[in-house]
Image 1 (cartoon, rainbow, N blue to C red):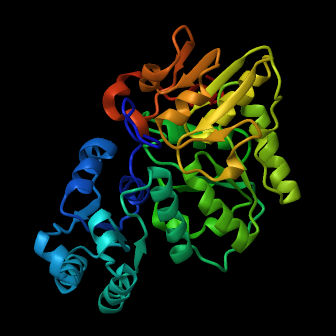
Image 2 (tube, rainbow, N blue to C red; image 1 turned 45 degrees about the vertical axis):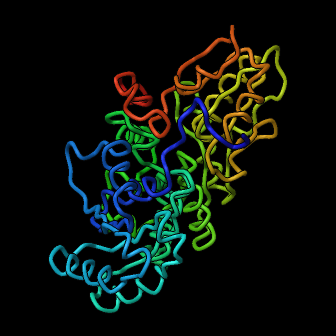
Length: 377
């Protein structure tokens, strides 16, 4: 069966992605669902419950609500929660049942905002997309609603980090180490979308000189900020051995105002092929580093990422069979450990844990990939 999974799991869903993106910003994320999407997110896809709280609510959609409709109860419950908790915003997240029923979330959001005075908006998920779609859409809509459009770049070397969620950066301290690297290179950190930062900071995103896209989740927001403020973006990660190239790309973007994706400029030939599977920004950076060793590299992107993040040899796949076909002749495969189960026999396999794919199974193997980049260590 095409585009199906018989051995591999699927990536975290769009509902989980949206909730993860908004978790730390003081808003109220409301999942309109009986409880399945809520339990999956809260028990599998979110790690921050151990040390912080967030307003993640479930509406408890019943069979009768789904069949007959009862938007008044939904609106009343959200308004009552707003009155008691006064969140910074309300984000309505769709799930499969109300999606099939055609629930008018845009109208519901308008009513809630008018009645409560709290900014309310709809994130068009439906439970059928992956976390990149959900988290990327949530951050972009948040930017459209919250960012101060009168802000101007202050030309101080300010950088926004775009695309930070535990689904891509689950190891303790990773986002903090990314910020440390930015400061160590002589830049300053503007806002971080959206871990370890506040909504007030995010509102000032237009003051940055450049945006650093650290996962596919951040691309949609980067493109919006570029359209509104003309702020260029750079995609890539400061992995060991790639810091200098990424730093040069950030400086070029500031000087020219042009977007930069330096890892796409890798050689396309080599003595054998190494295939990288996962988020195109992380895997693209790793592929660029490997290509400089005389190896032909390709990235297989199994998530809903923008094509701008893929090189000429890279492919976007949908389903397990497509992945198997693309890795059939690889000499080495770099991917989450669960991909080992569909790899050709005899192939060299290098594990790279991706929390959005395997969840907590390999959590003990997670490392801070950027900690050693701190100056003086």
